[in-house]
Amino acid sequence: MDRPGALAALRAALTAFDRDHHVGGRWCVALSGGPDSLALTAAAAALKPTTALIVDHQLQPGSDAVAATARDQALTLGCVAAQVLTVTVGRDGGPEAAARSARYQALERARDGAPVLLGHTLDDQAETVLLGLGRGSGPRSIAGMRPHDPPWCRPLLGVRRVVTLAACEELGLTPWQDPHNSDRRFTRVRLREEVLPLLEDVLGGGVAEALARTAAAVRVDTDTLDALAEQSLTGLRRDGALDTAGLALLPEALRRRVIRRWLLDAGASGLTDKQIRGVDALVTAWRGQGGVAVGSSLRRQRLIAGRRDGMLTLHTEPVRDMKGCARA
Image 1 (cartoon, rainbow, N blue to C red):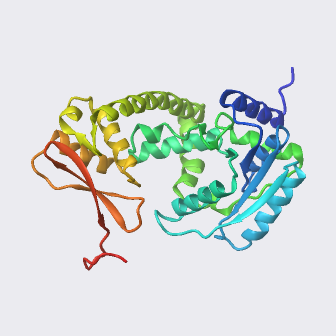
Image 2: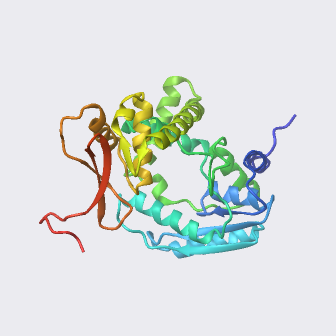
Image 3: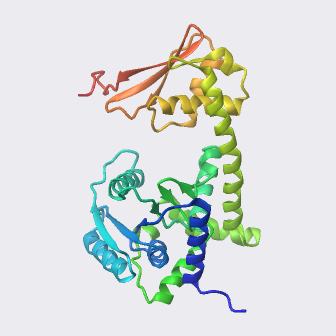
């Protein structure tokens, strides 16, 4: 029996995703014009009313023309609407993080309550896991991207990139090739073009699939521990503070997840493993040390986690510049 075509395979993946996660009667798709999102748009538009959301980051000359072409392709593929979202990318966290933040904010504003399909593939998941391993970011990073993290949907995490390329060929589409995707200044590009091919050669193939399976397995464990941490947090919270005696009785993996959730609930942002370990030391290695500063979602503020009278406490203070003056 002949294997189904690439576009049929993508439609099957989308149909299965919709069945498993009950996405709804309409959806949006984040379209860059590249092969992954273009193939996803074609498959999505064939299944239910689809709005294409095209983010123009204005980071490259001619980006407006690329966005306009993607909009026209989306309408030709049967999308009920296609909208170009022009954004201004900031500087926080570096160029990649800033662009990602601007993109997701724009998609959130434009989606009008509908879920948003993202074109991440199995290859993207494998690269994400490798990045997490190399940076020592812990199991949450190794767990990779979630298939369903409402409103964000990643129905192609089980599909290889070659399938999206083949689907574009079947449809006679010419996808945009982002120059950044071949720029070796970016770590992810070197992983894609150098590290993963070497691993495939040394280990005899199947590495990308194995990394994706690892992400799925770790995610199951992480979700279970997170659920237990939520239960523990409810019992340990006292008027916004945390009981250190109760925390000290928890296993390490659970205790740190409770601390992480507590910090996030208070408005912490950009949390690092080092910061969480520092707050954990206020429980397990208390010797009167000072508080631990973490980033805050509040403008020009940071959170300080400290310990007082057997409780972990939080307060905010203004972020100060190098001269010691509070920023306006």
